[in-house]
Length: 267
Image (cartoon, rainbow, N blue to C red; front, side):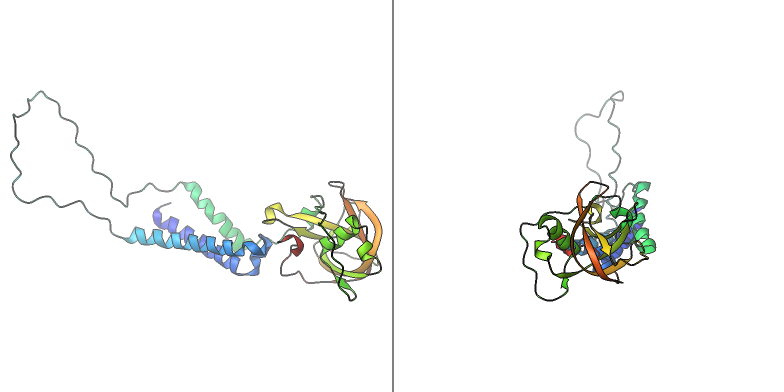
């Protein structure tokens, strides 16, 4: 890979990063707070590519001109014929001379092709069923706002059901949204993936569904569920963590949200 090819690969990679960070596609891979850093990285890559291309097109500086006039006569005795002289030094390479980049540098095109041709989706049921629920206890439980049903994040409902034993949920109808995952034993889960930084560290929070569950559920399909708290629980088969149930009163398909990850953990 010569310098021109390096500039082209850098420029293409930077443009794809900028395009991904400018739209909601980036929310499949990183949390929204990291979007400015993603855009800054793309800008740096494009700038480096343009600088490399400009440097390549700049003509190299030639050697310094030789002095005019006759060469001065050597002083002192002439060296003997048998005396050895040091070998003449090779001229220094020009500023633009460089070794080509290794062939492995072409692998930089792989993420470009992945984002342009494939655009991997957000993590779904396949990852959720192979990772234990990552429910965490919050420091406190704020009172629920008035109105029925109460819109809650899935992780908020799960934490109140497990760690508050449903006291703040008693007698209230709640509404949660998540995607469907079907356990090997047939238990239907409503799941939302949470993350600290990016999709590489994403973990699921799961609640099990009971009551008026739709007879046909499609894995990875999004559901908007209205229901009530029930003290029933189960254990996650992956890590043994508690998984609360939600008694479904009404469920309907829902479009995938703009941010597929749970906003509670995106701060």
